[in-house]
Image (cartoon, rainbow, N blue to C red):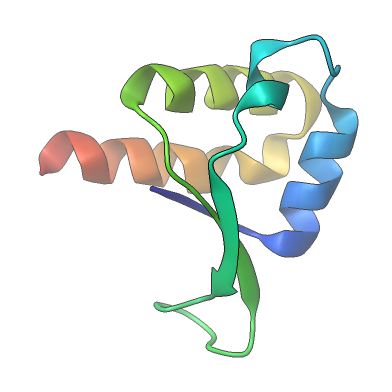
Length: 80
């Protein structure tokens, strides 16, 4: 699961071309940050490794501020 602060998620999605695959990954929910700041809202994205890598590639191109969150989620998933 990838967790991205809501404000960054909104800006990232706004930069994505609607015809690209990463735009169609819609399995996400708004939630409270369980680890950091409980008052902060995050978007939780449930995806497989391939989808996460697709999102990471898109983020590197259009909105690098979310690459750390995506990379952290990928690393965490690979370790478990």
